[in-house]
Amino acid sequence: MVRLDGTMGSALVDAMLDQPQKRARVLLVGQIYLDTILTVDHFPDEDSKLRASRMEQRRGGNCMNAAEVLSQSHSIDTWCMSAIGSKETTSSLVEQLAAKGINTSTCLHRDTVTPSSYILHSLETGSRTIISCTSINDITENEFAQALDDVSKVQSRQPIFDWVHFEGRNIVQVVKQIDWLETKATNEGWRDRLTISVELEKPDREHIDQLMPKGDVVFFSKLFAERRGYEDGIQFLNDMRSHCKPHARLFCAWGAQGAVGLDDNDTGHRVPAPKIDRIIDPVGAGDTFIAGMIFALHQGREISSAMQVACKLASCKVSQAGFEGLIQAVQQIP
Image (cartoon, rainbow, N blue to C red; front, side, top):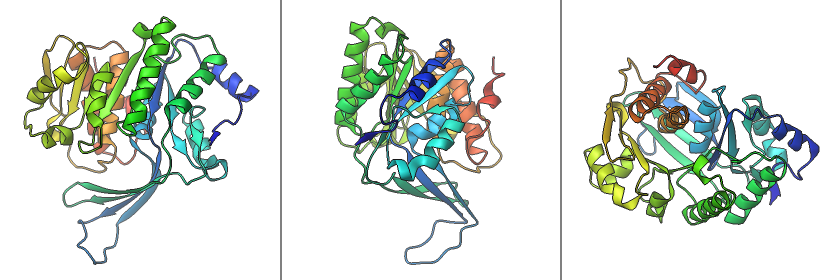
């Protein structure tokens, strides 16, 4: 294993010190993928041939998609922590992210290749089917701790990050990472200025429920709720409350119906999704919702207002290809 930046050289130190201190620092922890998206008229039958009408290659993965959105905000410094391939195979990726203002100094190199996904987007139903492939080792607690310690060594800013979001994967290690972060922030006196959020998307992922009590903000997927037997989002969040921190804020994007939320006083909120004329690209809509909530909550918005922003962002995402220009679409929401 080699740190993305190798050693803590002067270039990295200068880059960190140049970050405007008034901007919020948001760290997204998860896995970057390299996606190939094939748009087809309909989902293919087994052992059949089908011509795609469009092919696009872009960066993907839950944390990467959210970072693409958050990096568009002038009030947020977006950082990403992921295990990626060797320096030789990822130089272009790192350059692309740097050009977007996404800080990758907390990423780590591996000898294996960066994970990839093939996504079939069906125009007939608007669905997308994802086939992913990865053999890369997820980030361990020790690697996470070392990366954050390295950041703290080159600047005196506290908190180191204002918001740290954890993708719901690598559960056992992520739980340890959060516990380490909680201890560090508490001992150094900045826990009350740090927001920790967790995402529970895949209901069948082993040990996924262990993340529920770890977040100040908890994001669930509609699939997670439905697999647990729920048809109503508010009822689902109310029942999940006992598994989460007493005053955590809980959210669940509910597809075309919008989103539901539960605030720290256990009041339920429903926000409808804006109507869209046509589904262009649903890939990353849930990640865009999460990015929208982080963006809006850190602005200090009330729950319903923040959900309105996030739902607007997600609807805009579905209505366009890629993630460009999404934050601009919600800047004028009061």
